[in-house]
Image (cartoon, rainbow, N blue to C red; front, side):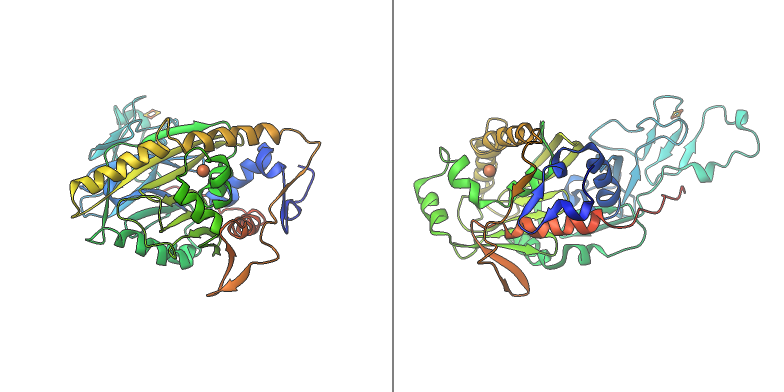
Length: 388
Ligand code: FES
Ligand SMILES: [Fe+2]
């Protein structure tokens, strides 16, 4: 690293090392993913007591479980004996988790409840102290569950800030005010930095270029008219097309909004995407398709078919995006050019309703996210996790 963190983000430009330097990636895991609220799943993925899913918070493998009393807990999925992942399954229902190595067994609240041949450990063995370590804070907003690796700090609602208004509107698309998810998770990966997907989730500027072959003439005309706006909202990004129409029930390409909730959640039309940083040049994306309650079956069918057509494994939009992410990582290998340009709209953005707002093709929302990134990256180190 040749620049101080605060020098890597300039007004209107970003240094390439933000995307290419493994030391920056490690620092992101420590100062961003270890300190802020990270999306870990939706309540509808674990509706019943005993339901669980596994996921990641930065580099930490996590089990998210619904307990008998209906509450949700998140545990570090790492055996307290010698360290392997305890639960390898992606989803399931169980009251306990057994480590495959020597069969130490934990209940779904993390308590160590079984140790084979325990007499070998002698009197000083403290079973109470050897439960699975809990993620210090877990909280939910409109069914979206987040975990935070620090016990103190802003609440989830503080972290979400103004974007709660959009999450409220998103779930209100469902007549019951509650969303569900279709079975199954679409998984894919690309050889590039995780932040490309965050930028791209709120980047109308590229739609009429990269996706030229996929956008209908009508939608293209609306994009070119520059209707709607982009918003830098409390460190998150919004593209707001609601002047074109409200969030469409059938998820068609009209109206609504895209949300990028820093650092790892994207809510976009009929889908929720979780961004999983794996390495400085490797990212996975898990996508769940959102179902509405109390609507005709054909509406939900249209939602999943649209998602598959545009953002499925061979989707018309997604393949373009994944390809450009990999080409960007390749291009940024060249140290001959150090800076990327993020200045679009600097001269015309303005404060509206308390948030810096740009016209539809601007990069205002990206500048807001990177200012947030910079502040977090300059912040203090995370206090060590206390074992339970
Ligand atoms: S490593 Fe898990 S029981 Fe031994
Ligand atoms: Fe795209």
